[in-house]
Length: 306
Image (cartoon, rainbow, N blue to C red; front, side, top):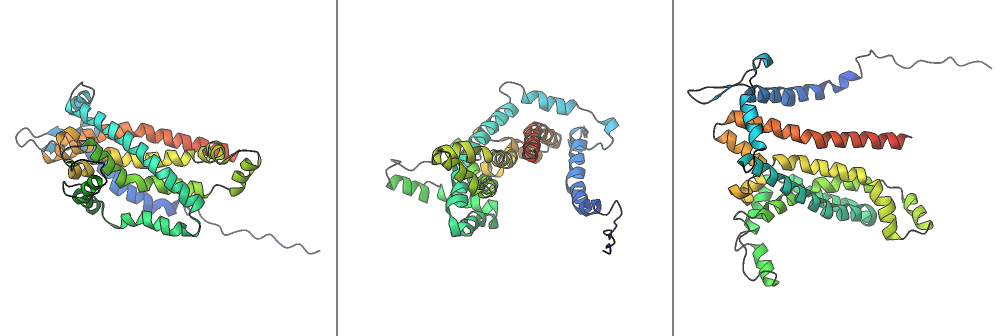
């Protein structure tokens, strides 16, 4: 029998495939690395003693860390404005994330397992708010939560409230619910993506072995969706720490100020060095949960590949 000669595939130079990542790398360089280096230059730079304006220092050898140390020291000083804002932000973010998970998981589970042919309809309904700017959606909540707004009218009509409640006068619950409303779709989407990919035969096998619906959920579905839960929590938590717009619109009082509000107020009051230092501190604090997420994802991939 005549042998068919083996044909080699097309040859590409070593730089060919990495070149596909060049646009994304240039984008990150231009809009993340360079601006972040400017922040470092401002935080570790000098201050004009006459006009009290920042003087960025772009040479790392000339950086001074006195201003940054003062801001970091105040963060760990009891009853300082920075520590109070950070602890308050931490509490708000934890509560809002837990509420996002408690709301988002049942919704994602319903869409993935029981929505049937209406999956697309439900997904569009949850993605539709992204078509409207976040500012307009928060303004809508301001109108709803006013003293004579629809929320108070509904709650008083149902007898839940005896009289209209002042939701917009520095209520922590209002800020937390605003965060939940703004970020819960980010929790639903990764959960739905994982729950929808669970093989139906795996669930049927658990039921064949004698597990009921509740036990199948806690022994199969919930462990399989662990990485999606972690991903949703990270996606929701990180932007919440820097959020300032929600608190500004729904509360705008010092008693509910979040860490992001401190950064904005520092920039508005010409304390640019302080604002830059707060940005760096926030970034350093958020690196740890991000590293944990990356490590957990890598371990899950290793276990899945075995």
